[in-house]
Figure 1 (tube, rainbow, N blue to C red):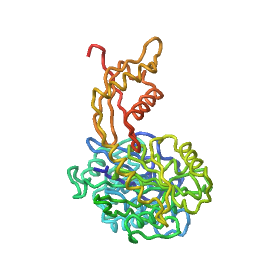
Figure 2 (figure 1 turned 30 degrees about the vertical axis):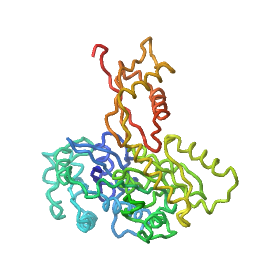
Figure 3 (figure 1 turned 45 degrees about the vertical axis):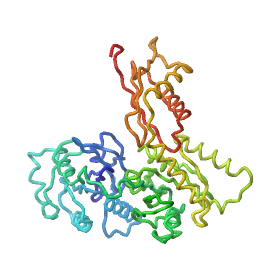
Length: 441
């Protein structure tokens, strides 16, 4: 089941980013005492008790503004609200209730989403407890006083947030049908690909970047098999405006990737692979999803006998962290090689669910350590006692060693490459857990 999504919203300068950083346990979002610094929402994984969720930080909401930058931030916040399962509405307990708070509250009521009212900047609960009562006038519910700076009041706030999460045992009837998320920058042809795959105009196709506002799920039957394709809005890199700050519009893709088994990462063949493509692909890689790279608009590219090799080498270099991803050159407009995607999806799903017998697995690891000796430090050498596969999607391996600090990243990558040489695992990430145990165990 996908992680619930929690969006933090409110007018500018009420402490949303400070709250976000405190909840996720690190300074992820830029904090500066200037309204409008957080232009785009930022996401991070967080947890409370036995609940894991994805937290979204948003830019300040100024309803009715004519300022271009603030109106963009409003659009980004609206996307986060549309995507969220629960919303934390942050207000400023120090400055009190203002007209903008009421306008934001009206906007949230229209979303019909569970809203938890957070009164921030309450640094002394005894002295400032009366400051929270005026916020009952918003009609949102009970206000929860917190101090994001001092990490006070989070327990009650998060209890209120998590009680509105979807039940863990809930599942859709189509839960066994593979879900494929289509992600990429704006205007690379994601909606056109969905239309080609479904054989109908299921998604609006337009040359205007960002036409797709919400994710669209399309059930497709092909050769007797069923697939669910999820079209997402484009991920747009914001231009630099005054301050040297960049934020990415990514949470819809994060939500779609969370729910998916396989991701089709679309690249514009006429433009070539970019660093922004690498950032987008990283979302799927970090979550251990199967990845297919679809280079679209290939019919519009002038080609010679080496064009495919040059483009493949460029993609492998820029997206070097996903060498396992499959690459296919397509044209969603003409249908060129689009049917090849089904074959690749089936292969990736099969590899995601591949289980290796423990005996065979340990033979491969033993051969690998014999060919390249494990690293050592200060006379102490890494020993690998035992390896076992504990889960799939992605294939996850636990490696028991004498000292996990000796397991260097480069050696773990070497072991991964040996497993891929032996078993393939094309299209899927592999996850490794290194555990330390005493030799006598």
